[in-house]
Image (cartoon, rainbow over all chains, first blue to last red; front, side, top):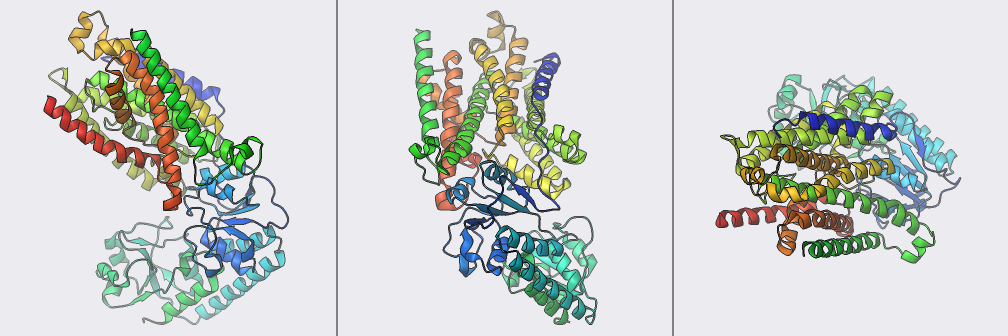
Length: 291
Length: 339
């Protein structure tokens, strides 16, 4: 105890030997850019599909293929899937519940938190389509890829084209709107805002607004002082799960004090999926009103 | 006489471990048929052998390591409240493992260097070094006037835990969000879905540490009498204590690397066994290894079953804390009265 260093060195050496004797596990291939398949190849027309994200459930419904779904997350609220079994959450899917449904395709919105569980599902012989969805191009690509994976490439193409048209229409409309400086509030306690690289930031850009939040993080926990200094023209309240009146806690921000706040009716701007046109509509309405 | 009692303890321990493993294999949110699973029918086969069996093995390894480390630390500190989680040893291990993961993220997880640093073995190594460093700190700062004061050491451990948690929070803010999610998942004490390679690495770490502790169990009897008594009975106190301390750190480091922060196993299991088998470490230590494994296997099965009412699996660490917190307070009150 008085001089543990020689033994400590011996321990470290022994452990290093163990470490070297075993092959290091390959770096976690959490897909970050391109959609990838994990596990075996899926059948051409999967009939038992489990969706591990509400936005992917929305995509399957929008493709007109809701009857293929056999399991969804506990956050799914669409009437088409309200009677389906729940397999856990977006961050904590239960592999046992997923396997129990005997799926022939699992749709996964790629995320590091759930990766160990999803990797195990794929290792046990279930085809998993991992879709990294961050920006608007990812949403279009996800519609095409999910359509193709479900054996309905035409429907996927149509859904993507519809969304693309909505994006172009929104861009046109944006050119006639004033360039307002906006802060998108995602959570209040602590204050979380949409930063560059987040989905709402991409939508805001298309809708014709300017995000006052700069930096590198897509979902920064923001200091109220910074928010006051940024002095946005408009605050968009996307914290729809928190009571509307608690926005007064942010009263130090001049726009909030002056009542230049628009509360969104639902969480569409946070669901990167076929709700895209509606989300753009919500944001443009917010940019026009509350002036 | 002692031999018979050792055999009795080992026999009941093995039975308890086997029983808990069978129960944990059969229990889960998804009802499965054993006959179908053994016949290779899907999804029963995959659920039993692909999901439940690896978790049962992982739980047994972690439980065995933490219970053995608890007995060893209790003997060294001569206090039944000593436990890897309470003493800050788990916190140090979490800090070491976090440092390894953060270094992997900094090197780029896709690069070869990043992959090696981020591998299960490196995280276990980092966690073991962190555990050893925090144990050294607790024992060094827990001395007053050259004498080890158990209460002071426990207090140092509690404060170090809070410090480690603070540092980990800062690291979580600094690494990319993807890595932070991975870190959180690991730290919250979930017995999850380790790869076979990670399981083998963990098994080697735990086996070495537990073997050293079992071999040293007779010396633990003497060490728990006090330094002066032990050395007058011919024990090289510094050396024996150093060996036990390193083995307990290795066990804790491996456990934390495998399953994150799972608290109080090293408190609950040895305490119950001491009441049944008495304080002789030659019996208590091997029995704790087996019953510790059985305990965590059952606790993890309970966590899995909680999916049915909750719709989500609570980390097994939450369950052990639920049991261990009250027990710790009760032990504290009792120690106070008898002292």
